[in-house]
Image 1 (cartoon, one colour):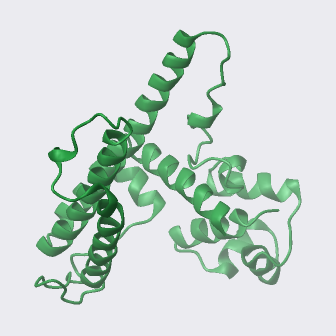
Image 2 (cartoon, rainbow, N blue to C red):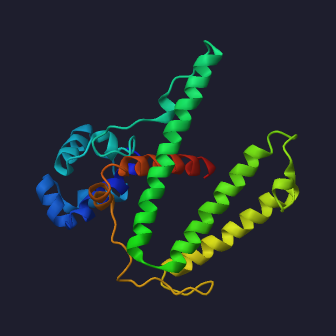
Length: 231
């Protein structure tokens, strides 16, 4: 099958609060066989993929990790065809890429800040905001530096130092954010209260952010595809 199928069917079962025994009974298979499917020890046939897709009311493509959308619908930026026709066509494609990527990022950030609002922790909000600010700063300087005639006096950190130092700063910020999210103090801020931490799952996110969730799922999928290529 693939590595996504075992993970996703396990996630769907736990989202419903089902035990392996109960799910196996309703799916008409043994608990041992379902356990093997969820652990990736055995591969199932196509008929079972369709059966379990109907059982959890999701698409087969979602079960196989081909799309982050449970209904199977998604807009993939990489699906936009390459063009060799004219400069105008190239410009239109770039503009489409800009619009789609911007939508994925901004919608996902909207979800993050809504979750931060619910968590009600100043430190976590501060650290995550700082991390995102540094990301924007780094990429702005990358674009800015593409033209050597642009005056570097706009920035106080020297060109040969900003990349390494800003990456180091991000690593520190990320460590602080992780400490705070684990309920531990960091950088003068208190850790998050366990009772304030949002209870989340793909199903919860889809229900609470119906208009924004598809962008987040596509962002996750695209990012993890790039991460896997490094492995």
